[in-house]
Length: 171
Image (cartoon, rainbow, N blue to C red; front, side, top):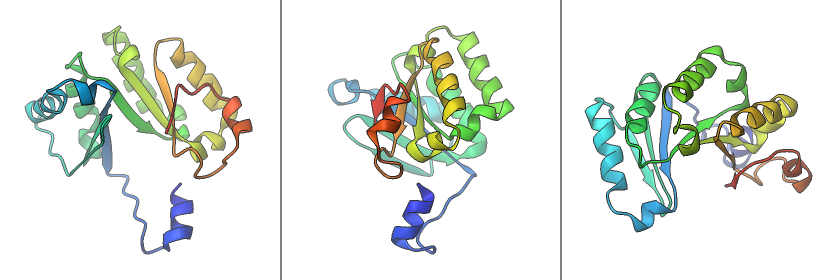
């Protein structure tokens, strides 16, 4: 996705910062249930998480924070059982031991976290390692985790690719 944006906007218009974590709360209930944002921001404030940027829509609230606070922020949001969490990840994260340990520890500590977790993988990222991504997705979907295909249509636009994966959500 970054490469495609760079081609469209030019190399000086796109910036990537690995020191930023994005935490999201999403679900249709955001629009119809009051207090979702309040609970999210209260949990982050209680964990002393500084928010660098906020973005929202009718079904989603995103905050950007320092990457070092990403795990702490997820823990803070996890403490709010009424919220559904979405985490952007790259297919490369599948093989990153620290990320996998953190995910498994979180799933083991709270049996309901899987049903409240959405892992978002970009279309181009899924195509980097399709076989490994499919196995990874199947094992976590069996534990209740949902997967969203992020940025569908921005790269390998083909329903043939879509059939090879079992995404719960297209974005």
